[in-house]
Image 1 (cartoon, helix red, strand yellow):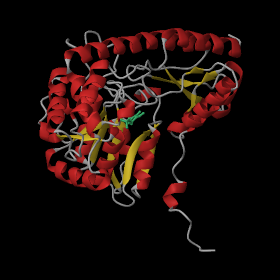
Image 2 (cartoon, rainbow, N blue to C red):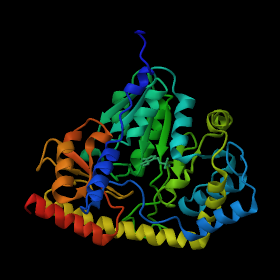
Image 3 (spheres, rainbow, N blue to C red):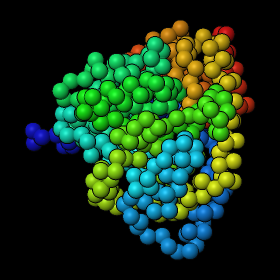
Image 4 (cartoon, protein in one colour):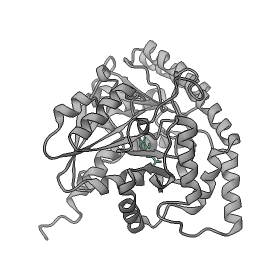
Length: 397
Ligand SMILES: Cc1ncc(COP(=O)(O)O)c(C=O)c1O
């Protein structure tokens, strides 16, 4: 037999999503007649807002569905830029905004732009699993740096500095984070920006959950609103998406705000990799920024906040460790070591015995992964309450 592997070596290094396996097992139980409370799902349960669906229908009926520019519809790039001014108080030139096929494509394009073979990219551990796989696909070296409650489960300038080597090319962080729901405080972000710049590295900040932040007071129109890293520097790649805040996961639409000098190269990569983001989705997304849509989304953000306010104390009461209050996204990363040191088995047991689907820490890295699980509050409040009651019975609380 040929000594070469049948597929490229990189494929063996890409782990499947354990959450998908949880979901498959949960669906099998449901098919067998059991009821399952789904707390594993990483997408909003809310449907796409009606004005967005109507915009898509109009665009399709008009018949103008062709390839767009690889950078996206100019009107959408302008609308996204304006959104940064309206919501985050930062002025962005529309020319710096590139619409992509989900933020997944944005991450891949930006990493393809900066990662050469064996280049190291620093990531927190735990983190969104695809990031390390994107780096690996590009023959780079993803370096997970263990983080915990002492740093909000986020990288700090200090950690970045201590882990920097001549092979390090850049840093990729998500704020708010999946799986921890925690944010990088703005003063720490300032230090991270300076440290990465001093090292002449590249900084990528995934802000796909920035619209979904909680507990920040009068944050939409007041003093304590969520802040984008674009507030601090233009020399950063900011990744974002229509998937989460805008409730459009299936439309596969995201964006990147890039330093102006890199836009042409990103365009070239997108042209070659997938030609353009989907046209119906882009026409639909134009309606995201209408006041009627934003009002719907703001109500939904408040619903997520209410769910978080219920779930976190309830899980703590059961004995899960949640030392840092998550302030964004829709996830709670909980220490389950009181119950098990094998989170994968724990998730299986909880599913089989309590009918609650949750995700093992293993999906998000190695650091204390066997002692953590992720809860998603992407289900209605009554279902969350049912899930907590089931867990209480199973755990004997
Ligand atoms: C932190 C983070 N970044 C990026 C993505 C990719 O999302 P999409 O490609 O739908 O924009 C996800 C999806 O769960 C995520 O959690």
